[in-house]
Amino acid sequence: MARLKITQTRSVIGTKQNHRDTLRTLGLKRVRDVAVREDRPEVRGMLHTVRHLITVEEVD
Image 1 (cartoon, one colour):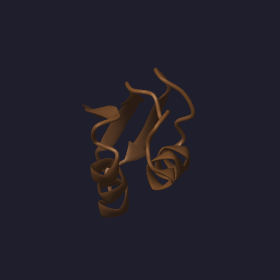
Image 2 (image 1 turned 45 degrees about the vertical axis):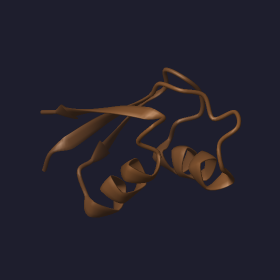
Image 3 (image 1 turned 180 degrees about the vertical axis):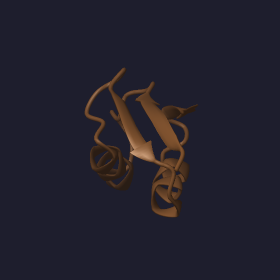
Image 4 (image 1 turned 120 degrees about the vertical axis):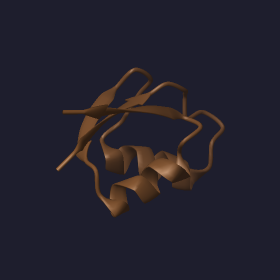
């Protein structure tokens, strides 16, 4: 199964509580934090919610 490398690129200051909670669920706490997650529909939905705060790369 493919894996995704998720990097937080923007601050959560001034964002909605839902976006902050989603980043925390993904394992991101501050700018430049990196998390690696399996490419699953649940994770893709979370990434779509906070797409303006993160960058995503595919990892083999």
